[in-house]
Length: 437
Image (cartoon, rainbow, N blue to C red; front, side):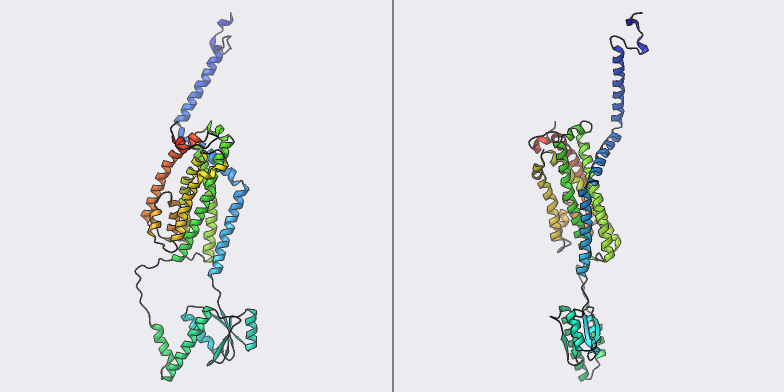
């Protein structure tokens, strides 16, 4: 039997190589069928690709020393701010010493302090020399000497405004009591009548409950979101430029689509930033509630922190896509500032408006209107929610508009990224990157 008569079904290689060709065709057909099944189940593959890119960004960035150092410094800075606010916001209680001859003035002094809603601690010293020694050592703020009818106040340098008003009120009250007695009246009865008198005030625009503490919470919340966007947003552009410069992006785009790579990068950095913000925010809320700096219900503070995380995530998705597209337009880190500067201004402007206007006018119409603009919402809406200045419908409308913008940006920035990320050399014009290829 000749070689040409070998049965083709035996699997033995024929001289003309037809068996190998059939084997190759079989492998090609199997590969095609697998690709068909892969495209048929495209949603699963897309999720896996995006997750792989996202996981890579999370692992690389969380292992960096810079991330750990910035996280620790952020926590320490926030803790220092809370403690400094606690110390500066808690005025020291003035201390007054009386000699044995003026000890009876302690009661009238406390009454005068109570009228002025002030706290004053009192003590009695043996004589004036001992009281002056305490003054020089800084143990007391004032020493009362003389007699109850003719007393003098001795201080080390000067009398504080609090004690000045308290002593003045006490002196006036004692003079009034003496005149009442001379006229045959009872100072206690007159004093009771005066104390029972009240003023009925009707406020057309009453202050909101916990307004001062809500303002503090709103400013701190806005600051954390603002700093996180400023720190982590440009990292998206820097990462894109690094991959573009090192040609890594060309290898990645051989297996994944451009928009998948961009989405995975943005989601990965967003997850890292969100984790850092959540950790810092949790520490801030706990410290604020524990120290009394945030003197408001825990539900209000936790709710404001939760909304801050939601708006940060939406904001980072919006700005992250813009930063990724901007980074794809250039090939050098030195050129990054030129393309990212407009995006940075879109982050800075609403924050500056918020912290400038809201403390003086929490119900500002300007801020309320600007907070509905999707590019401004991530910075302004967390502040409004924290201070209680946003209605439910306003929050819902801002969410809908921001998500709508996000959908448009996914398509728009995806085109820019896909057309520009593989082009090296000179800066790619935005008009060129938007053209359909």
